[in-house]
Picture (cartoon, chains in turn yellow, cyan):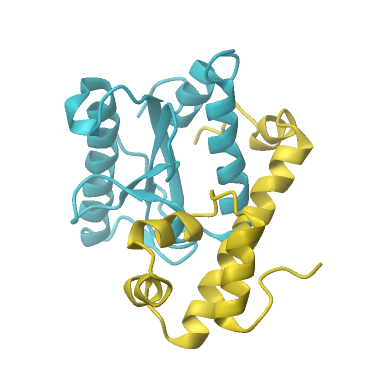
Amino acid sequence: MRTANISLQEIFNEIPVEKREETRLSFAISNRIAALMQERGLNKKQFAEALGKRPNEITRWLSGEHNFTISTLAMLSTFFGKSIINV
Amino acid sequence: MSDEQSEFEKFVSKFRQDAELNPDFQAIMRFVEQILSNGALERYFRREGKMSDSVVALPVLKSKLRLYCLRLTDKILILGNGDVKRSRAYEEDDTLQGYVIDLQRFERLLKQEVRAGNVEITEKEILTDKTFEV
């Protein structure tokens, strides 16, 4: 058996902390949206139709890679009647 | 694969010190870090390969780079190799297609060995005492 020559943690440590935090928040928001969709029984297509968006926009939101604007967060929070982030 | 470096290590070696592509490399690694914490959920990946295989890619959004992986379960992700994305589809680029084919071949071998009783894949682990040549 061969063990890995590289440490993932070392690679992560080379990344600016604020960029890592940005990605952590983006994943957390996408997880929150996925949970709220599940709670409402909405699949991606139904969710997109309810918001008047294209399904590929929902794919972006759920990927964990999207940089959400305050306007999108406010719209989502209004749609679900629940907060997306707690400030 | 008996090379000194794993496929993922080759990917890291290519782009870790590349001044131009490092931001795209680091973005992929930020996603890998979160996937380690959150699980390898389907929605975190771009579907690649064929419908019948488990090949996926990072990132989902626009990037100069692609990293190909095998997503076997929500808890088992095999990181493969990747490169600069120069064409619209991986099939149009011999290098990228080669990485996808390597993973498809590896998955076929794994499934074959599961059927033969030499490998067991649980939700969290690949259990075997054998090594395989791809």
